[in-house]
Length: 276
Image (cartoon, rainbow, N blue to C red; front, top):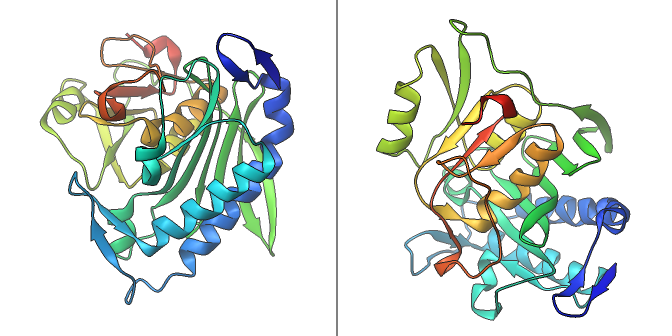
């Protein structure tokens, strides 16, 4: 970790690489805590924005929050469940956490929910980990060092390198990830304007993982979402060779004090050459 006098503590790429395994362990532990919650008996509350929060969200958040405090004290952490405690803007490094992305999927009894953990440095996600505990999958990446998909096999994690794929040639079908729970007219119009698209309906940040591993060509979301929904996937897709932009093709920035931490929209491109 490097100290930047005017911008706060900064975690560089080498320091981030050393953190990858202990951070992955936090995501694994948070995922196990989520799976241990009885969905039929858990408490479900509504937040001010109308989204649900459950015992599972809070259990995962405690594990990650406590773990980060022990692992690397002094680095700020912004969690969806503790927004009232944060003080942006962050000019150095900070962690960005969604302890249970896809709460609606979780409450509905489906398996496409994730634990998202990102390390952001100077406004750009540097490291990302997305765990999908019910699927037995973890996607992780460090920008400049590549990305991996981890699968659970006989109680152990097996890692394999992943990479995005080139966009299909003109006239060939291409696969677009679309949200099962958060459809919107602008995103549908974007997909409809590109003939030959095959929609693949997915939940939560699993969509970023599918782009990163080359199973999906593009994931557009042209409706507002939050920084904690995007940051981990941003790092993983970028590390895997892809690119994430706003709808106009500009870079996204995180932790800079956007109102309510809103990302107005984004497009995750498996092939950077296809980004407009």
